[in-house]
Image (cartoon, rainbow, N blue to C red; front, side, top):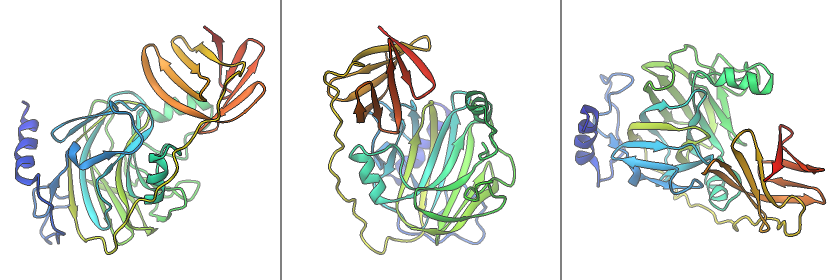
Length: 334
């Protein structure tokens, strides 16, 4: 075991198996706190439930989480939270990696994801983005990357309301970081998130950089995000500062069904980009592979004679012998 593993194990044995009551931070505590002050609880894989990832997307060793990034989706803390503090470290393993921490994700959106509707919840996202993402974005889309940063953006997703702290992104919704303190791939970054009274504040590597207030709703689920690239989390610690006033229950939704593609001319396996394949199946599901690795599985939501659309508005058009994918790729039948 490494020195860090021994620290994780010691704190885990002290705190696991018991619920930490709401705490009141002491005035003389450091900011960010260390995580060994009164009220802190170590989080492990036992504290999180899968929402819409695959069984092998997340792997835990004590308080250390390994995420493949495939497919896009989230895991959630086992119960909803109102006022709390969160400490964690994260490390991207691939240039341009993307991930995030969701604060106060709404129960409705979580339930819809679990039923197969969509990939990410509504709530406040605390961005976890590698420094190389902007370069890859501009190269892929030929557009400026001025609407995001890789240093700890905080922003609402879906109908959630938030008044961002300055500096503010051009779209008026994101809180941009006031300082650039994020480290690149294969380096550990430290986040301290304080979510209290409809306000979220973020410290990156010891420096407060971004946040927002006027958030509504200001309770919900804490989620960790998988989004396309491998990432690791460790030293996750939670301190509750208040109890939920009302019991929050997840609503139920009918599982999403696929539009069948039986008899469609695009049935079969299509290859593109030196190793990627998409298999179009009669039951209306399409799988994306890179070599032997499954990247994702998505359902068909609409179809016409030579076209079909997958969830996420992924349009596929068959023109002659070529399958045109998302307006970006051209695939040949295997």
